[in-house]
Image (cartoon, rainbow, N blue to C red; front, side, top):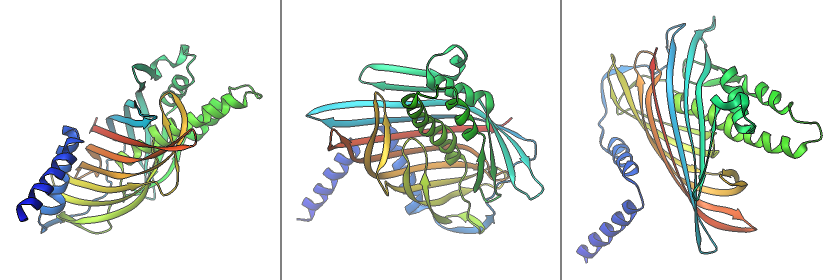
Length: 327
């Protein structure tokens, strides 16, 4: 009987891993190992806070991929969205000790695919493009935005992108209500929540108001903006601390939609979705400046979406990778 239980557990683990790709399995193993096995070591402690030098500049590249797999009328439909963005953070410190960061986009590409049909929008083509999305990306690239943060990593304000959105919408004819509505939905989902708030979520977290050390952990509750706005409860744990190098942190989060969310899928208008799942990640933070130098997150979600009045099952996977350095 005991053997049967072990065999059953083994089969379940095998089936679970079979549905995951290699990157997801590796990330799962890293995070679970740190959460369960890294021992507390208080022999060295430090504060985890933002402290980049005034007038410094940081260069980042972020890649974000989301895949959708749904079954409808015994037919499997697969689609995906992806973005590849390079940008700079120019850092300034005000008299109150807050950090003002000007975000300047160097390149922005957004790709989508449904079945075998691919489409791409590139900010570099905006000037001569008739594609509204490319024109949006071009405006963001030309203008940039500004973010204000506390030393504890809390985003206090974002300015610039709302004004850009209003400027873009003002170019539509007064009676083109449909065009304006579609454009605003794209701006909110792809620009505001995706490229702006989504990228900030990769870089900045609310740091604990206490000294940290190996094995230290804390929890956060937050709403993740981006392509998929979700409620997230996260446990973060310090894997290691090098005072002259990096602080390595793992992140283990439960995801769910507290209310129905609207998902933008390639080739169709936003659909209502009920989702739940998890997100796991690892962050490499510069111990002296508090700036993220590398991060990677993998999310796996399941749920249902509303199609023609019926809720059908859907699987969504998301991978985000970010690398950066001081210029």
